[in-house]
Image 1 (cartoon, rainbow, N blue to C red):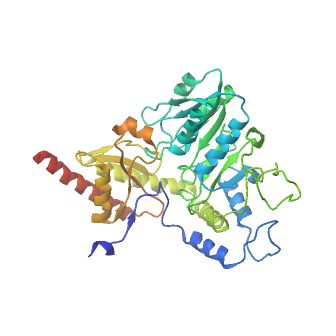
Image 2: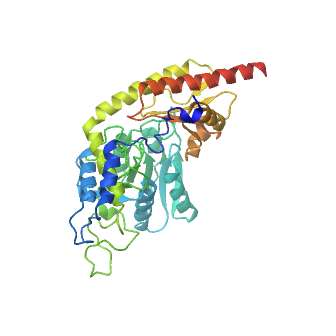
Length: 390
């Protein structure tokens, strides 16, 4: 069978999930088959109110938070920029902020930009054994610490952080806490009503099974973050000032209706399957893949007990990009290589060289896991022979 006829094995779900549930594709098609229905923007009633449907679905999935406190944006990065910028807009002068070495550039870059502008003094907390400990956070707090932004789940190591213990500690010191949940929403239980966090960021195209260009955030107290973008909302149009009620306080312009239709359908699929079932399957397949890869001594796995369906590894004697190329061209397996937009993680685990990451989803079959494990071990075995001959 020619390479291009082999079935595709997609193991890059931590970047963007694929395939999508049939209901997601159907929702997009349906949303485009009728005129857009948006409150305050049309006299038509033919379409479905996908904005409300998505908001209410996420409210249920994320612990029953008030739907109006869920804000839709372009993606998680957009959400983080709005929250960080809006919080700092209310701070006079320079303050101290914290993040972690586990974080993605969607957190690191905005904070470092504000550091360059002398708006914040930033400390980056290291991790040990794939986690940032509450003790390390406490040791980093200063008298002028006002903000901490950190990941809930590492996009490289698959480790879920103890945001409850960290949040309790931060709130004891009056520090605003923003959590990046791009890798956890849809994969594990997230009860925002019970977690001591101030804002939680999500994206639509990963674990929530929607499409790119959708995302948002939950905010507990909207008054703690100033709006930083203004424009049309379809409401209160006589006023030349942007509305301050929720969710309009942070939402501007025309929504991505097909994207939110997809997000609503993705959340509905997750609710139907149930987070416990999703977790059980992910844990089973992750454990299988790691057991199989551990059989080849030439493979280094950077977290042997990930909490999320993410496995990061390298093969001795091969560049990670070359391994990704071999998997794609030789086996039709799609992975991700390089730094994964998380340079500080790689500084710590592989000297900044980067690694190969495979990440499966609900739609990954056990047979696909077996084929992928065999392919990686075969590549590693050949590399081991080559190293031995050198």
